[in-house]
Image 1 (spheres, rainbow, N blue to C red):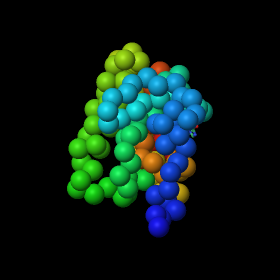
Image 2 (image 1 turned 30 degrees about the horizontal axis):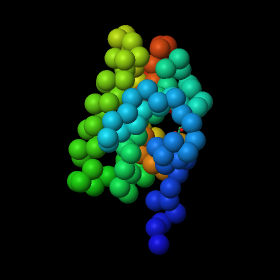
Image 3 (image 1 turned 90 degrees about the vertical axis):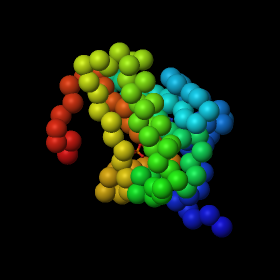
Image 4 (image 1 turned 180 degrees about the vertical axis):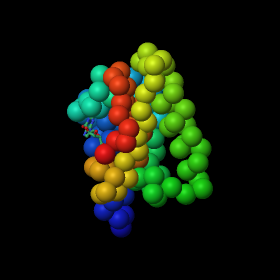
Length: 120
Ligand code: 5GP
């Protein structure tokens, strides 16, 4: 049996086109789509199509290094595509204290307005 945290999530339904999403980038390994509750003019989620146990960054193993790099590189490509030449924010929430709500690793790409630091 799979652990509860490793169960399918809403993102599997998006990957499988069972529920709609506004996809902004897709290749054989990753999918990028607009967040349903955007926190900025641009708010995109970048996810691996094959979760491979990567419910969150805290579950990363050596075998995941290639896909982790690919998620960040995709964030750069999409940031350019979105015209975020003045800058952007990358976020990976992990676990309850990190405010993670979907247990399929995802990179948030947020931009189009001035960000604040520290984030709170
Ligand atoms: P987390 O809190 O886990 O870091 O981020 C999960 C994100 O997924 C949230 O920003 C939330 O708005 C987004 N989200 C949750 N369900 C859906 C959905 O069905 N479609 C889309 N496009 N985004 C979703």
